[in-house]
Length: 156
Image 1 (cartoon, rainbow, N blue to C red):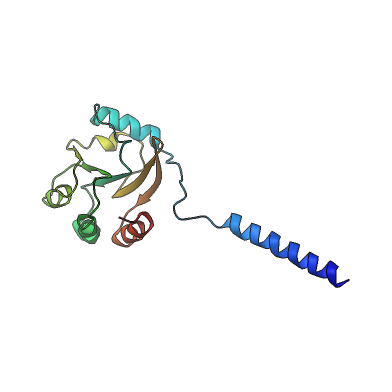
Image 2 (cartoon, rainbow, N blue to C red):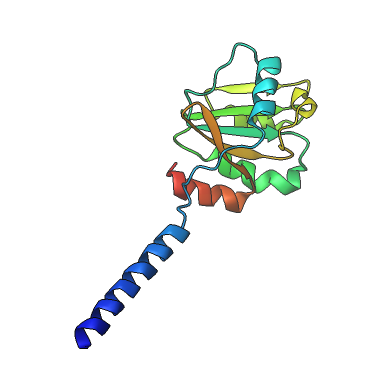
């Protein structure tokens, strides 16, 4: 009788472990970007000759966000050391802060006409994407705290 109880306990433990493992998702899991078609149309319209799939990360930084709201975020972005794998799109560059941020990255596309607003992209503020297998993933609306979390996850 004890063998039967021990075997049941083992199977119960095994089932619980499998359920727990399947319900946990890693923070680096890739979630498809719902508005990728609209974003690709935007890229073709605004930057026809530019490809970005050779990069690992994409930052879209609309200039319409209030400086007080994004100042800490922009300081954090400036401090990144391994910036070669980033593509930055600066939308409607009106402020002087763009020069300090964008000079830190080797490739910066400037959307001076605000073409992004013509497309359904679900981008309303500073936004991060992971690029993998010629697709955009993990759309993340940024603030300084989230940026710090991402820097730990992606180790930049």
